[in-house]
Image 1 (tube, rainbow, N blue to C red):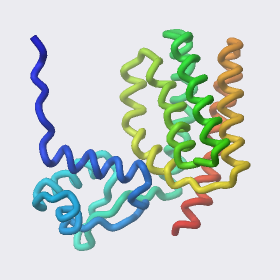
Image 2 (cartoon, rainbow, N blue to C red; image 1 turned 90 degrees about the vertical axis):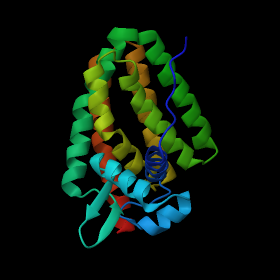
Image 3 (cartoon, rainbow, N blue to C red; image 1 turned 120 degrees about the vertical axis):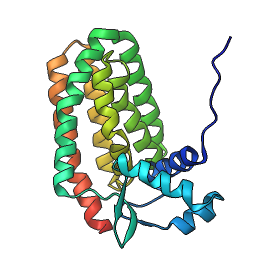
Length: 219
């Protein structure tokens, strides 16, 4: 017998669609959201929209300000520093655990991500390139075999994706991201775990300067 799959509620469907729109960059950081407009867009009443906004508020993707309304989150300087520092702590731990837990599958996944990124970079499809950048980093936790590490990353995964989708940089900067990924992969393949961890920390912290510049342009 198969388990019965419960259909998603209207609230869950609205929340899922809104979450995707935020993470993909379709909705801009700080963009105001109208319950009436969203109700019309999704073809539902205001109740599931209001409930979906509350769910995303709990996830930190929506800011609900009394007397003003709902807005897509917009990170400030402090939250960016905290996020980049969090990643610089957690991701190096995750790659070490992934190498211990299932190095063959982990390295294969990284290699596939890099090949896909090279293809998108060559075709100057930088939006798809950044989505694949997310897949590269998410794989650290996919193979780590530690549920607590995975859950900790899930707390910020959508924030990272939303911020990443708004990165508008130079082709050279995207090329540097790709080269960093290649070097991290090569170090891990050679068993140079500590060197790969150091490279990853620098990679994550260097990205903050790019994020700052992009958010300043959007402001």
